[in-house]
Length: 496
Image (cartoon, rainbow, N blue to C red):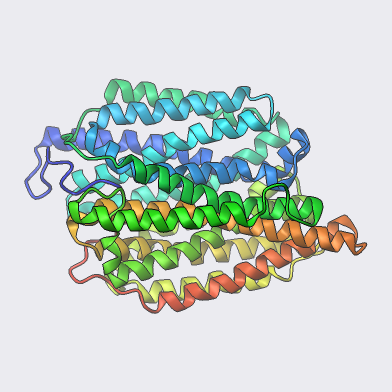
């Protein structure tokens, strides 16, 4: 995802591939798919566990959400650096590096005595995950000829959707029957198996070359993303506990993050003329790319904010257990995965607008419906809502990914995918932080007015969904402006 099209010159796409090379390529892609399935499964297995862990570890929602926020934030910081790694290292060593880091993080989570080490373990896992995603996408773009790419991306979309879809169900089943540590103990042997199989079977399919790494840009990006997300998260926490700012004013990390982001952007604009930028922002010269990225930002904020709030709502307000919550979220996720290849084919035939506009409308309608939830809301209504929002997101993600990547010059492909990946993760983290902050502040104020805790929490959740619904309207507007790139390649699959 984050390398130049020129990075992998071992196998020019235009040349015919021998049978032995084709077999090798299929094996490499299959191994990467299995490993990506494991890391994606891990990403969402935690989503139903947050309320459970809040009770088990005795922490507030605003602390427990760092298990997800820290994961996403680490991904947002590491993804830009993967462009450098994928250019400097060959396929085999970078695969072994990514899976070793991920496995170590999983082990750390499994033995963590409390929330602090558990968050550290999630951060380590995220570093491995951040490398695996671009490695898979880049390898596929390099090895698979354009005419077969839509089909391959369709298969990838199933893996990328089904793994996150069954994650909450598996997490719910584990939490209903076993201790929370088993979420990591059960993933550990699968990760070790994928690592061992890869160590034996995976072959190099790339040619490393020199690529500069601007350390200042890495530091600035970490400060920018870290400051913004930390500021948003502490905003909810400080107001919930004291009704006022804590020892550090809530605006300070946000201001530092915004300043670091401004300096980061300025530095990239200066370095890109020498082709030394960590993220080359010339990708935004394409209006289609800029619109697609804006729509992705709104969709990811909505998706991750909803994913974090729904389990808190179903368990703490409606009274479902973790397994029932996991089963509630399963059909929508599976439908989202199965729609990936279908939406890819429809995109090839009709372009993005006829898919993205209805998709954005469906997402917005469900968000507005969620502003009405209470403790008496029917579970069937929630199930229907989650299925509809999943269909809407499936209609958005494929056109957005395909149109955006096809809209930039080939030599900027690595930077386009790195920017998209970073925005994806940052938007997800911002969505979680914003929704939790709004829920926490509103719940505290309603409780102070004398409402029952369950009613106060329901009121807090309704406010968060209301803001999400307002944000979702921007996606509808953006959807009308996404165009199919001239001479675009076949549908490039489905994104999360």
